Length: 217
Ligand SMILES: Cc1cc2nc3c(=O)[nH]c(=O)nc-3n(C[C@H](O)[C@H](O)[C@H](O)COP(=O)(O)O)c2cc1C
Image (cartoon, rainbow, N blue to C red; front, side):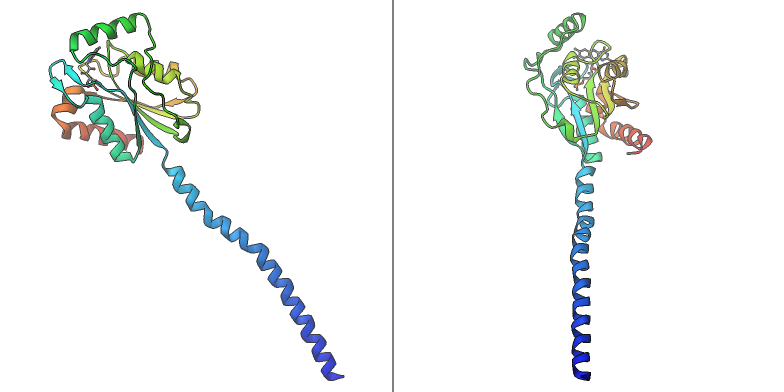
């Protein structure tokens, strides 16, 4: 009789352990989903993009340049922030010669043209912070940048402008960006003299570094 009682007690204990092991099975998937969290965080970290337009060829006071002034600054910002890059190119390239280029740019500004893009970006949705770089043309954004801004949805994104220029600074460009992207947050822009970017890179680097630091990047 004592043996039968001990046997029943063992069966009861074993069945009790079975219940516990069931609980463990349901608890395991929770553990896995916690482990997945860092993976999604790391992809969320890669959300900086540098978009820029820049021209090569004959530039006032610089002669023929093979890398545009804005491109030099854009590459440095991308290197510092780990951002991806996208270059805005017009479907019809601007002339290499300086004077004809200024004439076309002037006509485009006066007619508020929207020159066609060679290619639009196809993955803007994955970025939430966009550094937007351009040269100042006739005191304004080159019209091809307006085409780019209006061809894409910047709602909820942060846009950080930067320009290179020959003396005008950012001029009307920040206002134009705010008007073209009313649902984006536009932060304070950086203006670097084109010649400095081209001929005195350490000075341009210093300006970029302190600007990024002020912005908290
Ligand atoms: C068509 C054209 C218009 C320009 N208009 C201005 C201007 O209004 N104000 C200014 O400071 N610089 C002006 N510049 C000079 C450029 O802004 C400057 O050289 C800039 O660094 C060029 O950048 P990029 O090499 O990236 O194209 C103009 C240059 C061009 C080609």
